[in-house]
Image (cartoon, rainbow, N blue to C red; front, top):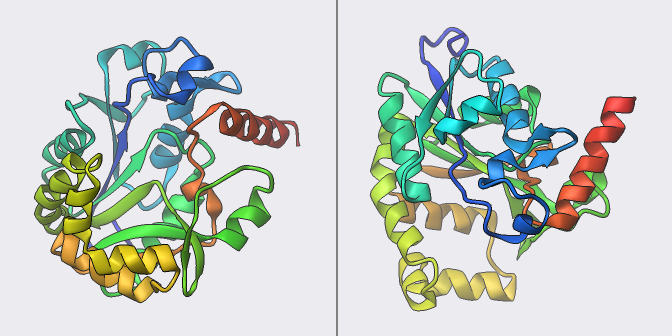
Length: 261
């Protein structure tokens, strides 16, 4: 289904190329994080189902590995080989959806995300002026929905926020953004290069809690070369990624409880 009345198409891309060599390795012998099982299903399957069922997304693509076909239900979903890096996988998603007007990229580790959450986020993006959008969730929202599950928050003047695990944008905007994102990605373990990229003023504001959402958006625009916007979401599922054993147990309990109700 195209975006209502617009004739514009949206492609959903699920980034599932991470090896299971981090904190989840102690929970599962699966070679890839996406295949770590949660309540009896590979974690990425929840994300695939949400993207596939979205009313705003016209096509779905998993950027992962050939053996995913042996573990996942991919009816109506394409599969492409992951790149050598996170940025390379985004590039694969762009190349495989050359006709799409907009693209939604979502990571494979947000199993509580739903079609409703995705649709609401896309609708919010299209209601504001911008080309490139990232979701943020207020601490109060996250803790009210998921008490007891630890998250990392940035303290801003407007409140404390956590970053969502997806982004949405027009094709031209994402294409312009990729080279800049690649520079940031390659500098991720070098604090000096990161500071040079985002600006020392921004880092000082973050540390002191004096940064605002509006200022962060200005930095996002400068970094990406697009009209970037931070969209405050009311559904914390969009930011609840599973990074470690404690989060895996907490999210699994939520899934099992929801199944029993």
